[in-house]
Amino acid sequence: MSVAPIEESQDVVLLERCAAACGALREQVSRAVVGQEEVVDALLITLLARGHALLVGVPGLAKTLLVASVARALDLSFGRVQFTPDLLPADITGTDVLNEVEVGAVVRRELSFMPGPIFHNLVLADEINRTPPKTQAALLQAMQERRVTVGGSTHRLPDPFQVFATQNPIEQEGTYPLPEAQLDRFLLEIHVGYPTAAEEEDIARRTTSGVEPEIQPVVTREEVLKMGALVPRVPITDEAVSLAVRAARASRPEASTAPPEVQQYVRFGAGPRGSQALVLAAKARAASRGEAVADVEDVSALLLSALRHRLVLSYRAEADGVKDADVVAAVRRKLGV
Image (cartoon, rainbow, N blue to C red; front, side, top):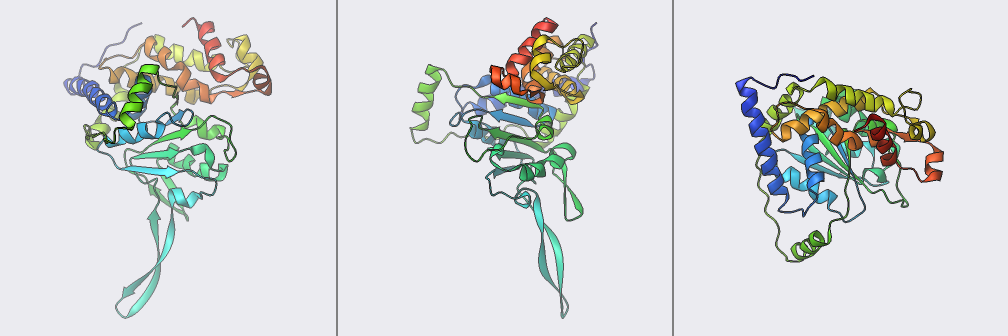
């Protein structure tokens, strides 16, 4: 069943601007980052959907540089938090400080809130798995509600607010697994792979030339807000919504539609937030390409990145060497996509 595409003249113009802006952002990012086109596209989808992204990859694959380059190409405030084992929640959210205020001849002491680095439009949480769960939890309210509570007072975060986090998948001392509730708040989990031989040669030349790439802001904050508001209005076909829901449900071991791999290796599958993420990300993917309707192809392209981090695998999966990507591949086969 097809749906009517966007027809309002303002939305049509905005959709065209959305595709043009994504093209301009790709061009700017390519000045600093070689290759990784699929990763850049996934970041742009997350940006348009006003979600959060988790970038996973071994050290040295330009994850931090990629996020910083996207931030530089946007007219948004940018904050960076280097997660370490000794980081405290107040180092992220901010804290109340005691100040002395002179009122005439009287000196009074008052508490005032000092914002932390999370009070920016785009926040890079670098190596997020290097800090204990207590500190990781400082992001939970911020990522879900776009606000933080400190000392009994709630403070709104700037609009837009998005977290792009990086994670090193290699087992190392001083790392902590992200809680399931934390992972579920990321719209997409984006895996960053090794470059090709030709790309690696280009990287070696560029990074040793002593020339810093110049990245210019090409999208304003107002445009980011308008494009983010447009994405939910992008129509999506009934077939695409059905695929998103069926995929999320097939990832649950108790579901009748679950493939054998899910029943054997998954303890908990994706919840409703998984199907919501698929639908919203599919709309953002269509908008990034200037397409007026999101369809099954958009949902299919995002199945892995939207579902993999929402699966809780069993110990049997670890023993048998089964990964989250293998389970999502089984769901794909079961659904025939």
